[in-house]
Structure formats: structure tokens, C-alpha cells
Image 1 (tube, rainbow, N blue to C red):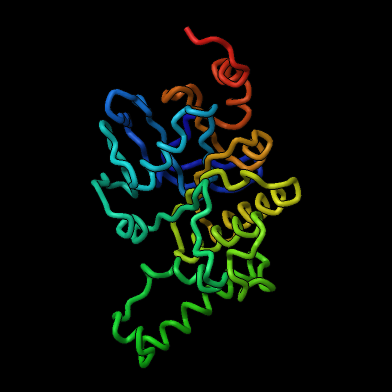
Image 2 (image 1 turned 135 degrees about the vertical axis):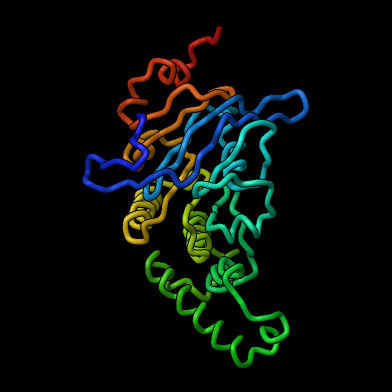
Amino acid sequence: MNAPSEGYITPDGRKIGGVLMEMKNITLRFGGVVAIKDISFDIREGEIRAIIGPNGAGKSSMLNVISGFYIPTEGEVWFKGRKRGPMKPYEVARLGIARTFQNIALFDGMSVLDNILTGRLTLMKSGLLSQAFWYGAAAKEEDEHREKVEKIIDFLEIQNIRKTPVGRLPYGLKKRVELARALAAEPRILLLDEPMAGMNVEEKEDMCRFILDVNDEFGTTIALIEHDMGVVMDLSDRVVVMDYGRKIGDGTPDEVRNNQDVIDAYLGVAHG
């Protein structure tokens, strides 16, 4: 799907805006191994953009390029109309890019509330000393951050575990807490690395609902990697498909579903 530069209207009537992030001819090499080969695609304001492909296709590497964790060997990343150079993780967060991870990365000994609060670190303005003594502007600021976090806790329906140490939670709830921490950063674009991995059917349904609600109520642009094709086709506005580091499909779920190269990749047809 070659969407017009000003955006497009989805089948369910949602307005998708112009290009927020653009990957231009991205190639990523690790020594002699080419993880990504000359891939271009964009992510538009307000859409849910999926990146799919068989194991080893280069999806996680691409998400790491988008998040700034990897610097492409060739090509350019553009964000909000500007070329993005090498950046440290906190600089990426300040740009408005947050993510979750395939392997849950939370602080097991800390409560749910405190874990989510760590997502607001880049938004805190008071100095380390005033935070340590918790007085004046620092105390007021922390109260404001806690209020924001409580709203996210309510939104994701985890009020009853807010004081529970994360290490005592079941897997599905840990995934939800990780989503909450990413949302606490108030991202412009949210990157989700296999948000449904390891979940049962009920947990997947809940996560799908929350992802749609985040996109609808907060207007957050979402890019996700997911192996469950049913989830991808139901959630996504557009899908880019990778195989062996190449892009083999890009379009709406229906366009991708009927793309012969995509069908061959998922059916395991031999590659020439």
C-alpha cells in the first residue's frame, strides 16, 4: 500500500497522519553476516504498523535500528522529518520513542508502581540531591509523576497488584506491567517486541484490547513484532514482511495475506 503523503483513512474510519518515521535503504551487517539488506518503509502518525517474518528474518534487528540500539551500516533513519544520527538510549527516550522487550526487562524486587515510575525518569526535571531529600519542587514533581502512573495503572486494570513485587507476578501480568512502564514515558511511538509471546488465549485477548485502546485513546503510534498471524491481521493497519533480511511484502493485512512471496516464506517453500 503506497499511502499518500498526507495520510489515509482506515476501513474502520480512523484517520492516519503523515510519515512519523522513515527507514531509508537500511542495511545492517555484523561482520560478514547481513541481518538486514536494503530495506525501506515508513511508519505513519497514529497507525499500528506490524513487522513480521519467519524466525531469523531480521525483525528484532530492525526494531533495534528503529529504537536506536543498533546503528545501520548503510541507510538512514528519519524521525519527524529529520535525519536521526547515532543516539544514546536516554536521548531516544527523550525523542518520544519507548519500547518493550521480547524477554521481560523489569526489576523483580521492586513493586509494580515503582517499576512503572522508572518509565518517567527522562521526564523528571528536579536534581538528584533534591530528589534524594524529597523536598520542595522535587516532592511536588514526584506527586505529579505518581498521579500520571496511577492513571496508567487504572487504564491497564492492574490496581490490585500496584504494590506487589514484580517478581511474584505471573508472566501475563509482567507483560502488562512492562507495557505500563513504556506508556509512562508518554511516547510518541511505542515499539512492542512480541507482546503476545508466551501468553494464553485470554491473556492475548486482553493485550490486544489494551494495544487498541492505547492507539485509540492516547493516539500513540505503535510498531510491533508478533508471530501470531491472527493477532497481526486483526490489529494492524499496515504490515511489512521480512525474510532472510529482505523486505518481501508491504501493505494492508489483506494485501500481505495474498502476496505470493509472503505465502511461500510462511509455507517454507524452498528459496532459489
